[in-house]
Length: 328
Image (cartoon, rainbow, N blue to C red; front, side, top):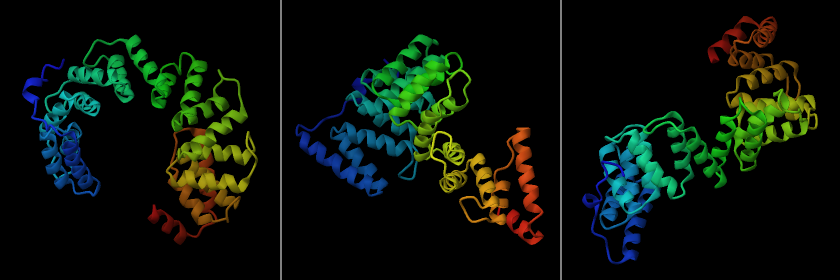
C-alpha cells in the first residue's frame, strides 16, 4: 500500500443512479473529443464528484498534461487517487508513471506499488514498466528473475512490446532465442522487432542466413513505416535478394526512406538519382540527398559518400551547388 494513499480521505458521495453518472461522464467526454478542454475539465470534475471514476481519470489527465492551459500535478494526483480508490486500472498506471518521474510527491517506491496493482489487474503496460523497475532496482530491490517473469506474463497476454523486450534481454547471450522472440513479436505486428529479425537473418553470424525470411520481415517493417527497413528492403529489391528484383520499386523505397529521415536511405536515393535508376536522373537532387545524409563515422561508407559528392560537384555549376547548400 502506498504510504500517501488514504482511502478514507478520498471517498466521495456517489449517485444512486448509475445511468445519471454515465450521462454526466458522457457530456464531459463529448466536450473533450470536441477539443473543449477547459469545459471538459469542469464537466469531468463535476461528474467525478458525482461518482464517475472515468471522469476522475479524465480530470487527472487534463491537469497532468496541461490541456486546459495549466499543468497541475498535485491536482492530477488527487483525481487519479480518487479513481484508484474505485479500482480504475488507468489511474493505477497513471500514478505509477508519475511515481517513476517523481511527480507531485510520488516516489519510485509508490510507482512499484501502483504498477503492481495495475499488473494484478491485467495491464500489460504496467507489467513492462514494473519489469524495468525490477531490472534496474528502482523503488525496489533489483530482481532479474521477477523482471523476466513480468515480461513473460505480458508476452503471454499478447503484448508484442514485451515479447520484443524479451528478445532484447537475450540478444547478446542467446541470439537464437532472441530471434524467436523477435519473430513472435513481429507476428503480432511489432515493426521494430520485424526489422531486427530481418537484419539478423541477413547479417547475424549466429543465425543461418535466410534471404526469404529476411526479405519478408524487412518488407513488413518497411510497409509499417520503419525508415531503416525501407532502405534495407529497397536494397534487397535492388539486388533481387529474397525478393523479385525491381530497380523501379527499389528507388521508391529509397525515396520513402530518405524522406522519412534515414541516412542510409538518403544516400541510396542520392545514388539512384545520380544514375537515373528507377527515377529520372537529377544531379541537383542527388547532390541534395547525399549532403543531407551526412557522415556515419564508418570510413568505408563515408568514402563512398565522398566519392559520390565530389563526382556530383564536378558536374554541377557553382550556382546550383550554392542553391542546394542554402536549401539545406
